Length: 466
Image 1 (cartoon, rainbow, N blue to C red):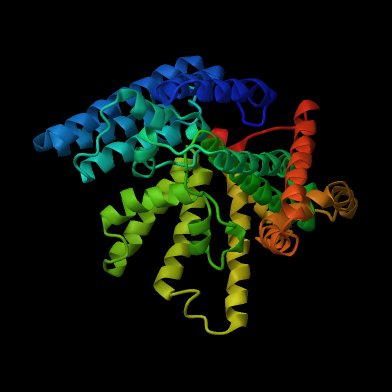
Image 2 (spheres, rainbow, N blue to C red):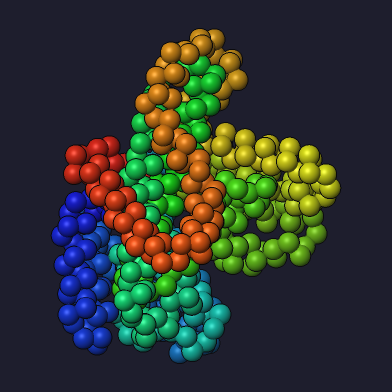
């Protein structure tokens, strides 16, 4: 069930909110858990058992770790192994069969269907048992609260990856207010608009460019296509995170931010401090720091970064493209750390030039994300520099701009804090009229986005694949 679907907007969400607030506080967590499991079961009923098994395993493991410290470490290792094994079987077993076949080893690919959101809820489950191990006395004794933490529907299928420590207190005690609920509604509308108005329309440009034969795709059109995809990916995922954070507020939860204008980054490393923040922090705290982080000798630092970025790429998908994409970031992040870039660049021209290079790397790397195979990624990349004998298709470029210029322009503006700054200035300048005008604008944008959904417009969601 997509947040941007009529069944969610007009049936599931109203019923869930009504039931939640009509019930007393004592029963709200149980009700929200039931609705969250129903939300997940809507698309894939059989995989609810997989999730419930994960919940039971991690609940029991955390209790044992917390109460019997003598066996805490082996139980932790066992829990992590089972969690990783679950993710491996569903997500990577088929890929493994193809890799080992290259060495003459064959086994039957079971062809498991990937459960939606398994990468997200497995990481949350592992963070729970690891945090309990690190902080004795923190295990949750109520099984339905652990289940709610892992299965809470706003962040279940696409994050943000919520850490148990940031939500433990909220599972028992949450603050409810009309102001927080209204803030949640506004945040949901912003994310809904990013997803439906921007990402969905940008996907039309990206799909047309990537589906075009390499020889027919002009250089400018190739760059336009990958730019559209880079923007689509941002507003698809950022919009979903905004909707998740907004929904959390409606139910009294405060989730941490997951995006912070990533395309405003001055370096590749900074980009990853702004993009999918919860994933970057997860790898930092549970992989990078335990390996020694940056406080090691250079060879060890390079190894630590390699492990993190290989796993980051592999987390996104069982595909060579994602591995290469992760290693691309490994190369540039390692270069920046060892060379002290961009801090060592003193002149504004030098910093500006490197910022352009970083942005080209980030946007160009999206080809690996979008292409269906390594050969497709290579062909598209070559067309971006005119090495596929590609003809100049000025008319196609002109028609695309004419039909989609507004969405491209709006998307580029929204990659910056310009609208936020403008809103703050207007709020000060027109303190009385601004609140009313703001609510009118939110309502108008919501109706605009709804019109696309009602008319059955193109409505993909990229991160369901992960």
